[in-house]
Image 1 (cartoon, rainbow, N blue to C red):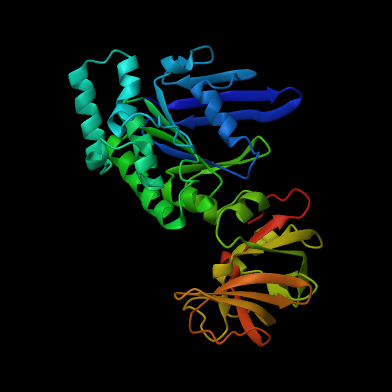
Image 2: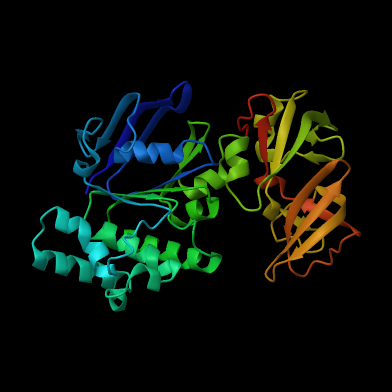
Length: 367
């Protein structure tokens, strides 16, 4: 087992700067998720670590060894791709054993490792089948098993659940998390799905346009996003943003959006007071917008706004309501008892204690 370190890593494809001064220290045994939109550089970062792409500058360490010039086969890593890449003419057993045979591992040891991994992944009864006889979820488990039998220092996974249906994705991501807990090996996992990132990662590295935006635990990313990009990317549905200005009214600080004004909580007035008269962006998560008739205990009800309901999506345990106030359209996650109906008006309460404020120019978090 080993940790991984990216040290000032840059990568160019011709004139295109794909990775920009990436610095990430991944301790041994951590489950790190690289997340971001398509084209942000997350898969390239993984492929550079695997040796499938050469870095332009900087260093990549696996353990204490710089692996910049080490061939992929000698890096002691195992990779699971989005495509299962199984040999169609081979049985499940032979697919899992193939890499070990190439390395001249003794037959008895191969048999032990394959059966142990198959048992771990609940595919022991499938060892004699060919890939075409398997479901998508079973094929992905075979691909995982092929990686496990190698007993690598680091597991690399590049969007391994993308080809599975929604139910299988939930099931398989739980299996991968249990696998990490059992193996206690370093996992580096690439996805564009922030739900996968939040539920699986010990820490999450959020990337955008080749730049590492923020690296932190899932809860800290959710509670303390560093900028509007991270705030909007982490959380589902995404955070609502309102352009506004900080002003002083009747001795209290407010954020005025033009269509409504909300008071800044006392605990946050110090941070907001430096922004008086300046353009800001108010960020409020859908789960922090409540039906005025069902406000949770402890939420200050001063930020009450009358709104128009455009669309509702009953989810059973909650209702997503797409609501509008003037030019601002936003989404709220409401108590399932809500009476919100399309075309009607209602009052909602914004929990300003959990709201975020960003600088309108830099998009950096103010609180």
